[in-house]
Amino acid sequence: MKNILIAIAALAALALAPASHAGVVEMLPSATVVTQSATQAVASPEAFDISGISQAAIWATATNTGTAGSLVYRIQRSPDGTAWSSDYLQVTQSVSATSQAVSRLPIASDDLVGIEWLKLHSIISTTTAGVSSVSSVLLAH
Image 1: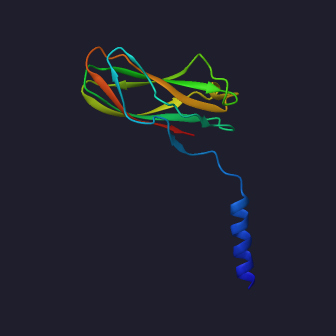
Image 2: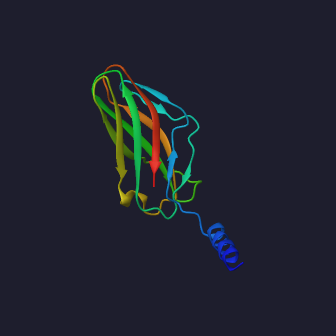
Image 3: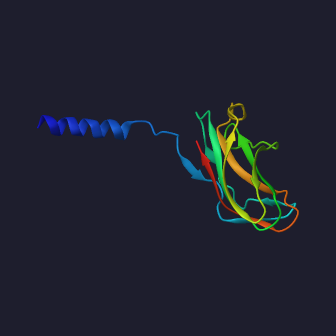
C-alpha cells in the first residue's frame, strides 16, 4: 500500500510540474520553393512562444538546383505575440551548387532579450540561377 501511495504521489507531482519550454517546432507550414534572387513570403506563418528562452537555433533543410549562394531566413520577433517587429532577425544558410544542405544556424542570445514570440516571415535566395526548395525550418530552443 505504501508503494502505491508513493507512486500516486510521484505521478501527481509530474502532472502538476510546469511544462518545459525546451523543444523543437516546425516553423515552415509546407515546403517552399525560392527562385534565384527572390524573396518568398511564408504562407500563414505560425507564432511560437519562447518566453523564458535565452538560446535558440534554426535547423534548415534545403535542396539547391542552381548556383552556389545562400538562403536568408527572416524571422519576426514580438514581446507579447501581438506587436511584431518590422526589422527582422536574420540567419543565413550557405548552399552549394546543385546540392542538399542541412544547417544549424544559431540565433544570438542578445537577439532574444525581451522577446517572447517568434515567427518565420520569409526566405530570401541569393543564388543567381536555379531554385532552392526549403523542406524544413526547425526552431530548437
